[in-house]
Image (cartoon, rainbow, N blue to C red; front, side, top):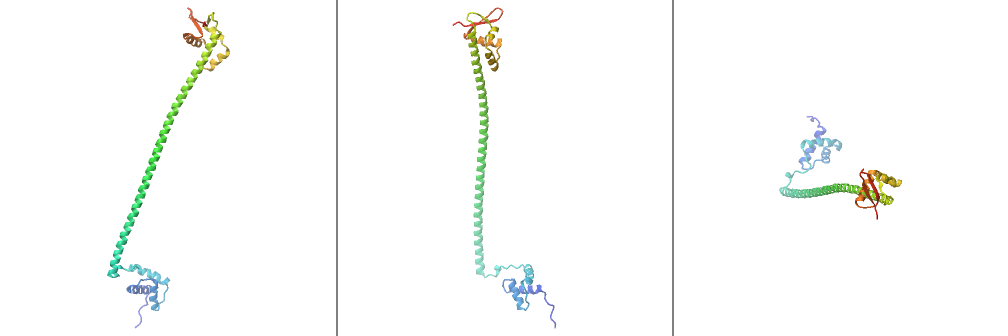
Length: 236
């Protein structure tokens, strides 16, 4: 009888892999090639590798030994070990989770404190700015009042000086009509009056001199029937 059809390389590799697997050995390229060489069919990893991969995929082969092949004592010890390892892993994972949770909580608390601090600082800055603005407004008002008061004092001092000058040039025994009083003053006094915002006029002089007459200072006044006003130096 003649020989059957020759096997393909894939079939040879699969048969060799099955043989290694049945022997309870780890199926790899070295063992499969050794089987093939024992059958006088030398092969290289480059030619065996692809077919061995397809065999492992088809057989769903896992290189790790199945625990069902372990002796009962080893299976029990293995199960106990795996239980302890799993419990330890759970404890470690829980501790890591708790550490992470505490860290995240601490970071969150620190962030909230920083935000609160920043908020307080911002509120304080806003309040200080508002107070500063209010204080500046108050100071501006005070400065304006002081300027006004200084202006009043300067004007008051100026007019008192003018009144003293009028009192010094008026004759003590002769009445001088108000419109003639202006002519007795120097041009310098007239210029100063203009610079103080109150130019010399008949009406202005009568008002200023009337105040001094009321307080019996510097001169006397007489209002005549024609309503003209006359002045003379106050007698000592």
